[in-house]
Length: 405
Image (cartoon, helix red, strand yellow):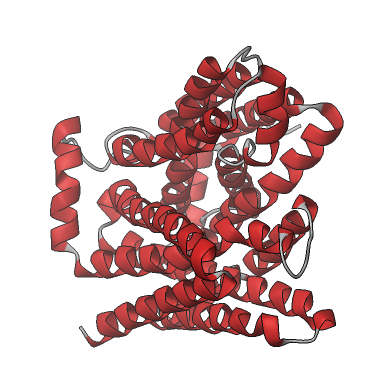
């Protein structure tokens, strides 16, 4: 029987031969499973609030604090991947996420649940350590494909988490969802501990200087600014649609329940599965044309949804499903291409550059959710599709200007 390779041996092998398919799959699974923790609570809020005796207003703070924790975690912890061994940071966050999920599972009232929700958000940022880890391990010629695969795992985690948690809560209870998520995350940690190689730090900057350097990186790299602004603008439409889709399906003319919204999450997942094609195209033709393609696909898909109310009733849901697949594909394809751009801008600052991109993206999503909800209340689905289309066209304009620059 051959000896089991040590971590150092695996690191040397990976550095020399690129990422194995098994390690790529493990990183994609880790990205998806960790980011899914942000969304488990959303379909369960009604059941959860009734069980612990919390008001709807109090329960609304659960996903809010989770998202705030995630944004803060990206900003203040993701840059540490350039200063310390990224493998160690990932494993520490895995442990913290397991503890936070268990704390949520045993919460007797709303106060400890809110604290656990904030901690879940911070710890779930291990996804933003996994992605630059994959980019670092991948050979230059395969980086787009590898990042595309890992990001597909991340987006699938976002899209499928609501379906899984709703089903689990209905049949086993909301606490079972948090317990099972903790177990799955623990198993992930064991696999990462066994197979993920160590990473050499790329900077010796102190923590304060490390955070301050992000402003310098933003000023220094025009390509990073365009990538972050374009992806954040595109995310505005993405957030607007997904924050109002369930409300629209529940009302006129569909009168569908939450299960239908979950089914459209599966349609979005189909788009995400096709997104690695954009990564391979970025490897072959460069990232800039792929960003234009992704934003263009998203713009056409968003605009096509405006026609749904005028279609025959038997075609409306099919048209909507096709549009969801299209804009998810365009959004994910643009994200993969933008990551390829920023990871090539400064290999020694990939964690900090990744933080800049994702802070911009999640800010855009939050803005889209807020503005989209207001537009839906005032003008219905037409207002949402107008915002989504305008945001994708603005992203397309930014990428066009970047190409000319």
